[in-house]
Length: 238
Image (cartoon, rainbow, N blue to C red; front, side, top):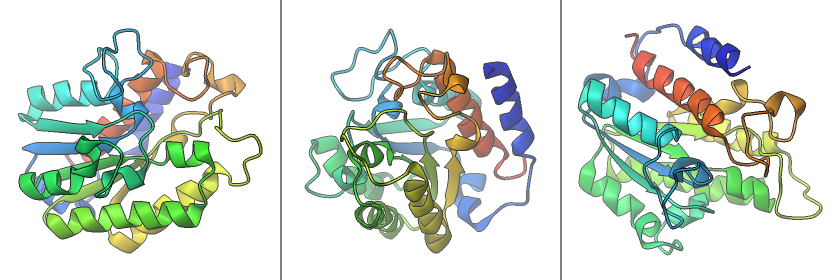
């Protein structure tokens, strides 16, 4: 299953002409900033040693991206991620200092690329999609405001098989729809991992998710890395 999905990732991203969304990244791969939640911190993997924040792991997709981009492109990757984070946490007043200062960090670094990998916790909490849109769209807008040169890639995770409320009313597709609208309106890139990973808790998801049906195993992280790496390496047609 994993080999099939990983192979499919490469097939989906044939080299295309440079898009407006990727302009800076195509000419400068010196640095990346990742804004994310527990899917980005590496939580749940056997060698995760963080305390709710990002920690280097062998298989985590962000860790793998960080190592590989450094080796192949000389890229410096800054990871601002917290377990349980939502898009609201990356605005001033967010729950953790490193997330609340994210916009200032982007403004200081002016990175060629910012990857925003959020939305799962809003779905888990059954946050109203309109509220998610406000926080998510505002984050993208602020990143672009403080660093107009920055290419932005939105990464929407696969659908988790667990929720934090007993009777949720909003489907995962509602949150993906927000990301699609924001990407179109703001002129940024979007990678929907639901195209490469099945939803948690389904028969097809065996071996890709931890027992909580929400977080990924090492195999699941490898699929995510393959999708993200292929997008970043082939976005510019090379």
